[in-house]
Length: 95
Image (cartoon, rainbow, N blue to C red; front, side, top):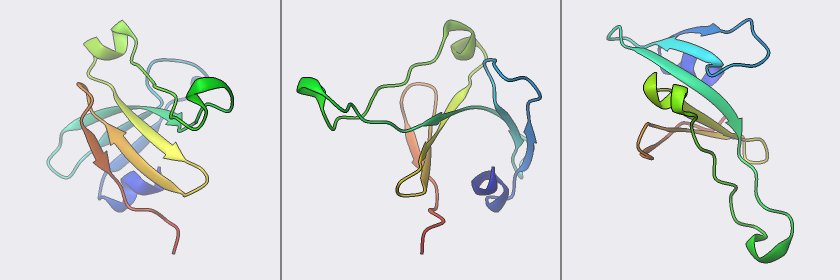
């Protein structure tokens, strides 16, 4: 949420434990963004070891134009995967 706040967004967190949207943000232009937050993980075994695990949107999330907000806990890096697979990198908190 800090990343979105630093970008000048108004940020709102859902009160549900599960659901298709974790965070709602309104940007400086008034556009509403719906985010599903996911931890960036990599395969630990097998022939895919070290490769990122692909995250996909549900049909409802696609209909609502939900964007994935990916978080890498090791590097403290966040990025947004917009509908259609386009990525937008966000600033890291690591110095």
